Amino acid sequence: MLLDLISAASAALGVVGVVLILGWLLRRVAGVILPRWIIPASAGVAMLGFSIWNEYSWFDRVSAQIAPPVVVAIAPVERGLLRPWTYLHPITLRFVAADLGRIAVSSADPALRVIPVFVVERWSPTRGLTVAVDCAAGRRADLPEGDAAGADVALSTVAWQDVGLADPIVVAACAGG
Image 1 (spheres, helix red, strand yellow):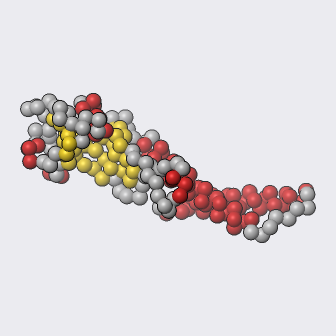
Image 2 (cartoon, rainbow, N blue to C red):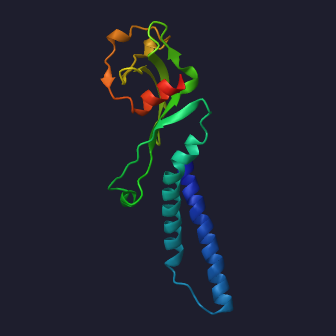
Image 3 (cartoon, one colour):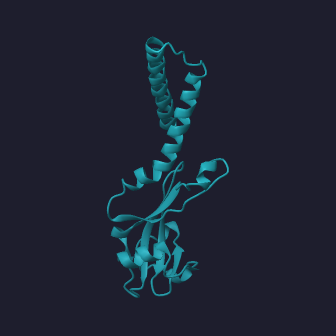
């Protein structure tokens, strides 16, 4: 967040520098004097513009850094009152990535798989989860932290959720393994 603040201030200083040079040129060449409010207004517009660009480009920048066996499974878009422009163009501030390289298939039932997933949010640390997926029934369950050792864990004791075969995590686990 500190880097975002420094970057916004740098963008504001850059735009103010350009406005100052343009103002000097206009005064020397055409004799036009810019109003005094143009400097703080241009700084504010630059900071706001940078912040909006930074929020909208976050998902593309972060998802581009993901290594190939990990894929983005879910990337919901959001709208909010504090960002009224998101009603025109929704924003992605979080996503769920699935590690297809570490899918474990149960030896007892090949339809049961265990896949590590990562929840990445804009202003939060990345959280890792282990999810059990039943490819035949279209259901999944979050496993407790100690049960991520393999695919033959006691999957009968977990709380299954019927999510359907079209659920992005189910699709990623079943197609990737």
